[in-house]
Image (tube, rainbow, N blue to C red; front, side, top):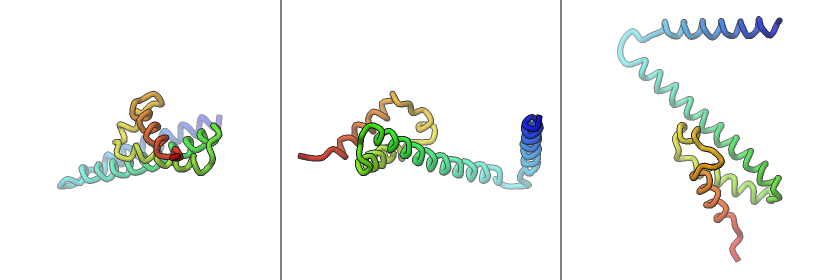
Length: 117
C-alpha cells in the first residue's frame, strides 16, 4: 500500500512541476527557444556521456569474458566507443548489435589492436 501512495505522490509531483513550468512562459523575446536549446544540449551531453560509459563498460566485460587481456580489452573498447562519437543521439539510439555501423566499428578496432608480425 505504501508503494501505491509513493507512486501516486510522485505522479502528482510530476504533474505539478509540469503545470508550474508551463506557467513560467517567457514574458518577451526568444527565452523559450533558449531554454529548449539549453535543455536539448544538456540532454545530448548527458546521453552521450552515458552511452560512452555504458558501451565501454559492457564492451570490456564482454571482451574479458571472451578471454581478452585487460589491456587488449581496454584498447579495443576505447576504439569501439570512439567510432560512435560523431553520431547523433538519434543515430546512437537506433544502433543494434546487427547494424552495419556496429560491424564496421568492430572491424576497424579489431584491425587496430591486432599485433603486427
